[in-house]
Amino acid sequence: MGAQTDRTPSSHKDEDPQPVKFLEPFDDEDGDIIIRSCDNMHFRVHKLILKKASPVFDGMFMLPTGDDTDPVQTVPLEEGSITVARLLRLCYPFGSPQLGTLDDVSNLLNTCEKYQMHRLAEKLVSSELAKFVDTNPLRAYILACRANSLQEARRAAYRCLVLSLEDIIASAEPEIRHLSALAFKSLLLYYNQCRQAAATVLSSCRFGWTSTAYCWFNTYGHDLSCGDACQQRFWYGEGLRCTVYPRRWWYDMMSPAVTHLLHEAPPLSPRLAETIPFPKNLPCNYCRTSSGDDLHRFFGLLEQEIQTQVKAVEFRLVA
Image (cartoon, rainbow, N blue to C red; front, side):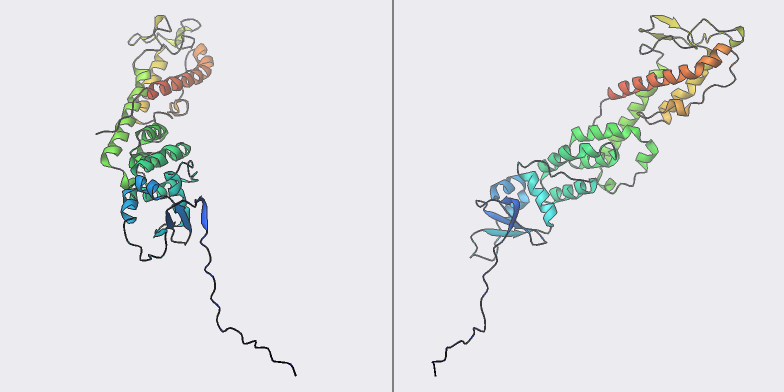
């Protein structure tokens, strides 16, 4: 009978610890600090870069970790891995984090403020806000002011000129509570200055941007029922090379247009052709047949000139 083989099994076998996996591109072997997100993702990065970016990180790195056996310090953060990765991308020369919504921008801006990354907050809005300015200019303005980015605040304030003043004042944007009184006052002052610039295009009587080729300026073709031209107000433009007197019906029509520009219309979206009622039952056959097309053409050129004058208004943050 052969010798019996001892096959007594081991009751316990120690498992080798699993190596920590780092998320690319934050996996450099020469990284001297590990950042761990709240969802247990790890980022191997460089102390010096984070210390230069944030005084808060500088202080955190000085705290004891409680594990002297690990040669590389691990620092846990309260943020999730997506936010941490976006924050680190701002610190490193990897380019913009490519955020998809203004909520993403706002959340990352909150994180920058938490870690006192003021320069990176400005970098964030400079790289990310431009694509949201047209769809939500007021919220973009608020975020730009939070980051102290004058360039982006100016860009967003200009796009706010398509909004009504009532919509701006009644805004329910979630970050409105972060907007300082001076920043809000700056926007309202700029909006009012742009309204004045728009109204001045009509009220100044200087029509160098157009011509006399309209029925209300033309002295030919009118029948006697049209009445006299308005002699109380003349209109002059260098491009016209003459002084012209419009038909009274046109002058009477432009008076409410000036009021509309000054007190009602958004500076960049006055929609004059849709708002100012066209004259009806004109006594002169020439005016009746020509005024519709002429007014549409005139209002189109007028709104182009309004945009030119509004662009010349400088936005300033009130100190």
